[in-house]
Length: 61
Image 1 (cartoon, rainbow, N blue to C red):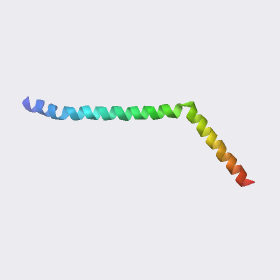
Image 2 (cartoon, rainbow, N blue to C red):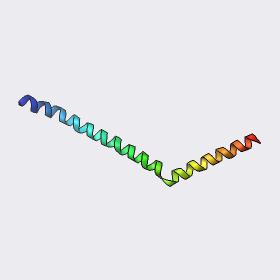
Image 3 (tube, helix red, strand yellow):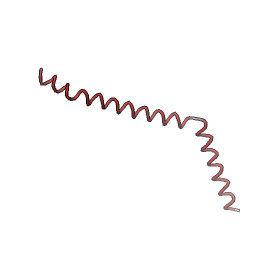
Image 4 (spheres, one colour):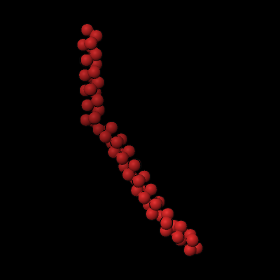
C-alpha cells in the first residue's frame, strides 16, 4: 500500500500537467476554429482572391 501511495504521489503531478497541456491545446484549436469562422476573415480572403483574379486578368490581356 505504501508503494502504491508513493507511486501515485510521484506520478499524479505529471498527470495534472498533462491535463493542463491538453486543455491548452484544445483551447488553441477552438480559438483557431473561431477565428476561421469570423466574417472579417472570410471577407479578407474573398478580397484577396478577387485581387488575384484581377491581376491574372491584366496578365492575360
